[in-house]
Amino acid sequence: MIIDVHYHQIPFIPEEMIPGVLEDPIRAAKLIGINVDMAELMARAREYWPDPDGEKLIAAMDASGIDFTVICAVDNASSDMVTQDMVLMQNQMVGAVARKFPDRVMALAGVDPRRANAPDLLKRCFEEFGMKGLKYHPDYGYNPSGPESYRLIEFLAANKGILLTHTGPLGPPSRVKFSDPLLLGDIGVDFPEVRVIAAHMGLINWRPWASLAAHQPNLYGDLAMWDTYAMSSYGLFCRELRDIIDFVGVQKILFGTDDPIVRVIRPAKDWIDLIRDLPKQAPDGIFFTEDEVAAILGGNAQKLLGIA
Ligand SMILES: [Zn+2]
Image 1 (cartoon, helix red, strand yellow):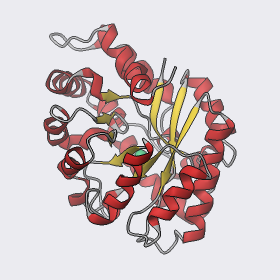
Image 2 (cartoon, protein in one colour; image 1 turned 30 degrees about the vertical axis):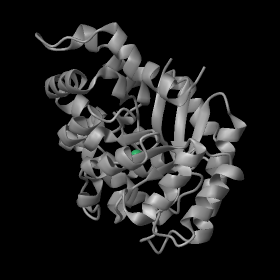
Image 3 (tube, protein in one colour; image 1 turned 180 degrees about the vertical axis):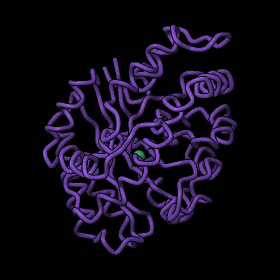
């Protein structure tokens, strides 16, 4: 079974926001050595990204052999472009996709804890829109274990919700101090029952995440954005992934794509195939087993999410 735990369901996107969101895939393409043509990328973004009813998501999953996907909405209270009404509408539409395809999709709410009414918004996302967890981008400017956030984590604890939260440095305007994986440490102390997925495992800064995940039973990490390392520096990726498995245990590592955003530069299937081929392709002296690959690609997420 293949499970993608990190997918951005985008019901709609204003044309003027596309170039900003394209910055990360463009950076990734340069690292991998893929020639990018801005007009072509814009055309792909317009084609792949806006997906109000989830039909593009399901077609992409079928094309790459993904059985189940955790989709998320994202809120950013520091952006004037993201209004209260937009947040509600986005969550409603993302929740509706999961309700439409309950055997294939689970939805996480995007609620910025800095909003005064954030607890009410999250409650509506669960009760009215059928969402099962929360997605954070703390690097927009908030502490994931601060008092505002704790109002939402309390709700997750009471309702068995999961938290997927961005970790790892990104370029400006990302406020990287808030994406430090160690900021999640308090959540594991005060809400040990809440399952937390540190998106990207901290990226290059993975050791702090690993040091914490080795001790906190409910702290996981996902491999979204690691395809850039894997496709640009394959040997380095293999060494680091091996180290992470040996330090933390393979059961903490979950597959993720960050699609449809990264889809503009590579099909998800290429990323899946790269992981699947690790036992055969890893450089001399670095070994992966078929069991480890199966656990990373879906077995771990299946247990974590309770998927039959
Ligand atoms: Zn993401």
